[in-house]
Every structure is written in C-alpha cells, then in structure tokens.
Image (cartoon, rainbow, N blue to C red; front, side):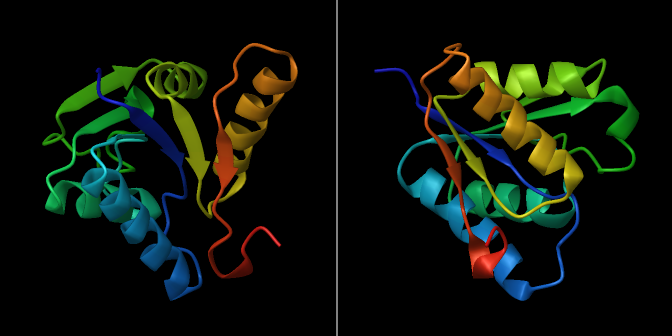
Length: 142
C-alpha cells in the first residue's frame, strides 16, 4: 500500500496563542506516528515550522512545497524528504493538494484561508472527494 499523505495548510507565523503552536506540533507528531507523510508549505517558521519539526522528530516523512519568491522569507527547509520549488502560490497549492489524500487546516492568516476555500470550492464542484478538515485550536475558527 502506498504511503498516505496529509496536506497541512497553516500560518507562517506562530499566532497569538501558544495553543496554536501546540496544535501544530501535535498534528506533526500524530501524522508521523501513524505513518502518514506530511505535505506542507516547506517553511521553517511559524506554525509550518512547528508541524514539520514535530513530524521529523518522530521520524515522519515530509514533502515541502514552496514558491521561489518565499524561500528566503519562510526559510525553506532543505532537509525534507522532498523539497519542491514552484513558480507561484497557485502552483504551490495545486502541488500540495495533488500529493495528498486529505487536507487539514490549522490556524493561519489570509493565505491559509485562501488555501482552505480553494480546496473546499474544488470539492463543491465535484473535482475531488478528499476530506478537508479545520482543526479549531483554542477556538481559532469559532
């Protein structure tokens, strides 16, 4: 059976509540412990960095996808199992989604919400049947 993958959309900043970082780390650990590959934005900052560090600390497989213009800003991790550089944000979302079996959205800003609404719209249009989940850490989405 091929490795299953989960795309995690989340913030490139830590957020205002420590519970957000804790949820990101718990998500990374959970994925690794269950043998699921993390597919995420390849950054080593904010919640993205938390989820990746936790997954890697547990021996989890990782795939990072980052647009060329964000490599310096998001401190793109080069020690991932797979590191993909895209031309732009739209291509990043598509590559992340196409390499995943499910999507989890953690707290984040406008970019994370954009990612969530795009994959949700694709589902409503019948373009996929992948689960899309919001992780409501400390009431973030409430």
